[in-house]
Image 1 (spheres, rainbow, N blue to C red):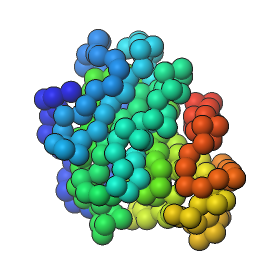
Image 2: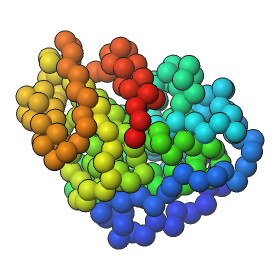
Image 3: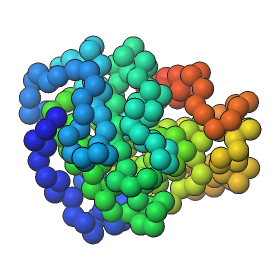
Image 4: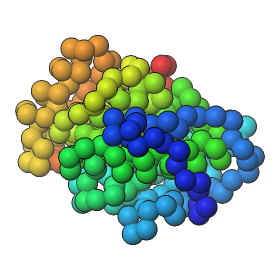
Length: 237
């Protein structure tokens, strides 16, 4: 995926957590399938995963999947890869510029620019269903997915948050549907001060939230990932 054009995103928008990339008619009819490096970020880069059943004449659902603190794209991709193959989901898996996502380290900026650049490439080269564009993540990635998803709900239709700690949007745009899961024995991001506090707040400001607690620790059980994917694919905006 080398040769992606430079992002046009205004840095002032990036500091607000806002993305400019939007689904459009792709410029190319035939593009590679499988797992491809983004070729954008040096040692911290990421992948694009396009299932073999993708067809340019049939717009596909897209999930931007974000890793946890200190994590890498491969772990985030692993949560959804099997489901991507069977359900025809394109998965974009960027890596953060630092050990975790920018707003968690202080403020929005470089990670927003990086994600917007990668999204622009996907939208230009692959047919994406604008009614099924999700951002998801695990742990810190879930917190960042909620933050960017709420800030960009005029583009993201769904948010998949697996064991989040918080949400920190600077602005609210649109009304994405939200899936949240959390283990009752989570010792990394304990459920009481995290999801059990966060979900009622989201519902209180009008978000449609599907919340699932499970017996387990800081992880994403396969059945939870499948339920989230099926919910995303079946839900109408």
